[in-house]
Image 1 (cartoon, rainbow, N blue to C red):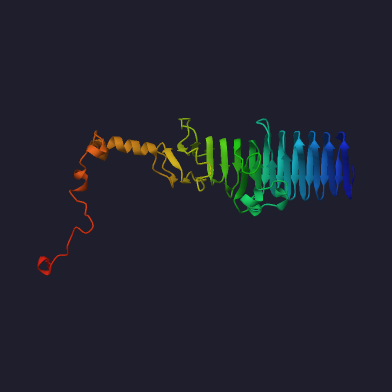
Image 2 (image 1 turned 90 degrees about the vertical axis):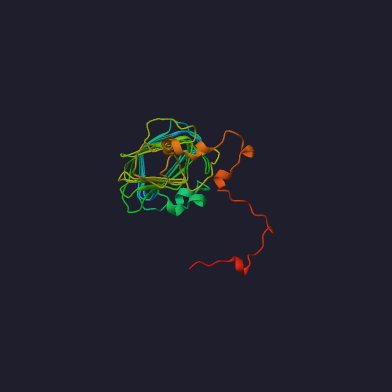
Length: 356
């Protein structure tokens, strides 16, 4: 252990097992080997890094940036990873088991992980700003999303989080979702509870499956695409967004997106703390008579009901059973005749009458 200066603990090949470390800067690294630590405390930066192996740590705490990275293959298991500025946890091929992560900005990038990965609680400040440290090992994210717009970055094949909380701030808590690498779809995203008094927003949510619940504040998702089904809920209403054939699974509002149009932008879904909802460029299948909706308000079921109610005088009852080419459409054109160019002459003065 160290109480001042920099604590550097490293190996090329072999395992590292240490108890507690306290220093201005703490760096623990292994090229090939497992790392096991007790509590790591740094007044400035704290970093644990390995290329091949497992990382197991109790608590990592820093006054500035905390970084825990597995650069190639292996799991990360930790109780708490916190920082005064940025908490950055990343792995390429393995699973993450983390109880608590906190920072002004938090990046949890899980790469090619499995459904076993789980983060219990993430807490960040709703400042509407990111930190360039987040993007040094996440190429493409800053270019596509803008590093100044993100408070929490979540990436991986499977994103399973118990709680996301705002630690304060007046801006909307801004979350960026991505797959194993930038641009990939998420296989499954599950967030049990989001709590942000100032609201939560994400600029893109593209997943095959998802279930996200908001307990406090609004939740807004832009550029949403569901491969199979994404479920968005709060304490007032539930939305089911289907890419597959919609089914009655209990959601109040049912939507469908065309699975062939994966890159369609502008598809927006918003749930507000007063029970209201708003969508844009969404195909509403059924609202189940829930009327606190705006944007896309006329559903497929509404249209079917209208057609049934107006069956006796529906235009569609006038359509013939014979093919169009054999049918005289004069009844629908009020006997108006086509005019052929050049087949007319101007009226003379005596043929024009003016009524007063």
